[in-house]
Image 1 (spheres, helix red, strand yellow):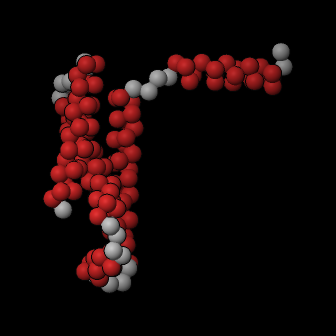
Image 2 (cartoon, one colour):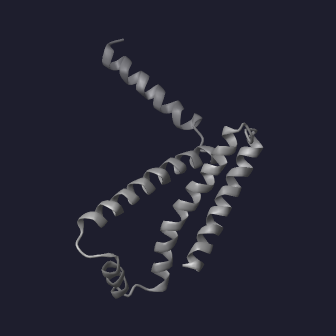
Image 3 (tube, rainbow, N blue to C red):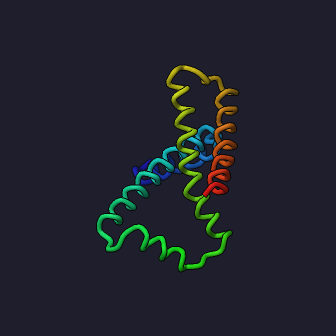
Amino acid sequence: MTWPCLYTVCVMAMLSWYPMSCRWSLPMMMSITHRGTGVGLSGGISAFALLALVLPGNYPYYLDLIHSLSVGPALLSLAKFGIAFPVSYHTLNGIRHLFWDSGKGFKIPEVYRSGYVVIVLSILTSIAAIAYM
C-alpha cells in the first residue's frame, strides 16, 4: 500500500470511530463552559477597563447614552442575564472545584449531583440579581 492510500485509510479509520466513542457528558460540558466563562469574563473586564481609559467622557455620560436607547424591559433583562449568569456560574463552579481540591465529591453520582446544583443555583442567582438590579 502506498503512502497516500495508507494515510487515507488511517484518517478514515480514525474519523469513523472517534465520534461514536466520544459521548458528551455533564462534567465535560461544565468543564468547557467553566473555562469559556473564565476567558469571556476576563476578556470582558479587560475590554471594559481599556475602553474606560481611552474613551472620552465619564461614567454618567455613557449611562445616559444607554438610557437614551430606550430598549425594552425584555431586552434589558436579557442583557442583565447575559452578564449575571457567567459571573454566577463561574463563581459557583469555582466553589465546586475548591471542594474537589479538598478531596470531596469525586464519586460519579456526586459529580453529577453537584453539577446539577451548580446549574440550578446559577440560574436562580442570576434571576435574583436581575430582580435586584
